[in-house]
Image (cartoon, rainbow, N blue to C red; front, top):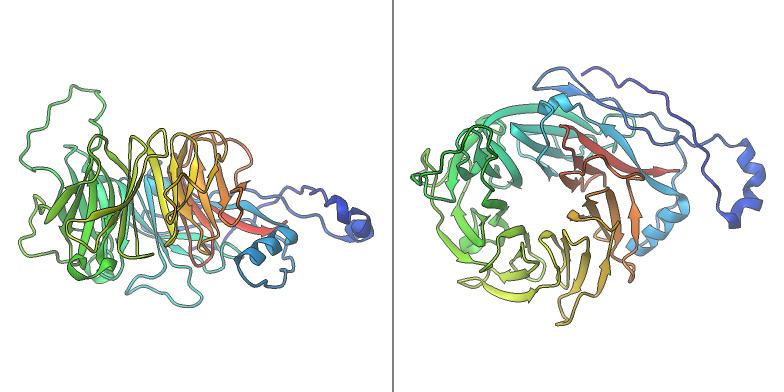
Length: 442
């Protein structure tokens, strides 16, 4: 790839804290002015490889490493850490189609990894899957993302779940020609064809007749909303995946890239299912090993249920209807804490040991909350809303909110994911690019 092209950065003076203004006045006059964040678009050389450009920034001395997450947060504030956008990838890498889903993998078998490597990002758009190599430098000196491989598909994948141990990627998909929905199982093995389609899992009768739509009519609403790997639960769920179809959770055998016996083109049926929500479609799905093998579902009517996957059939161990609209995010950072988000604009933080309401409630910016993801340290969550991108402090009893984007977005982000190695946030846009955010010293 061609080297990154340095771009000029607009200088901006940041106001000093009032308490330190007098003491720092003389030193501030001799100090260089900090550079304001800037967004720089990446450039693409082909459909299989691309290079990106990033903003050159002054190197400032880091604060001494504190101990514990709360101390780390205080030190970050004291040292002047701020969020900025360090990269916007080329929209042509997704044919300028909406980036529908993101999935981060710390390592993939057969590809570079280990110390000094930032992992891998998978993105989906209409009829395309892309594999990006992540820089371990977190955008400092090298581009945060470089497109390594692209694969054209026959599907539109709206949700992704990777299972690196089985070398497969599950995608909640619909055929772009017929609209028939399935869980498409793609390879994460370079020797078997990276991101190639291996087999399909049928969520509906493949012989079912679908109504013929008139020309120009919008496609029918999607019934298949989310997928999740259940492999980590072990036992009878090893080599399986779950899919949310309307109000039902389906469980499929999916042991690896070669599929179970009898895999064919029309799609394998589920091995089991249960009705998770009686009167509303599932809109959010999550899994966790915190406190046992747990699967969490959220629905269009605002209900949230935690299912114990160690029993058959799965039993619901916790239930609440705290939201007024569709649930959009579910995170379980530890065995006693559940975080939920909704189109009602609220983020609820629940103590699972209590039978009452949420422990705290955050209203990030007053607009609909579209999704949440827990930070690598587990001390905050990233929140993308109809207006912007923010974080909510999980260690603060008042659930304080810190904006990442400083102005309302023209179009909201479609999906977000953390890089657990660099603590960057990747945001999927409706214009075909991926925006990268990182923290730096002001």
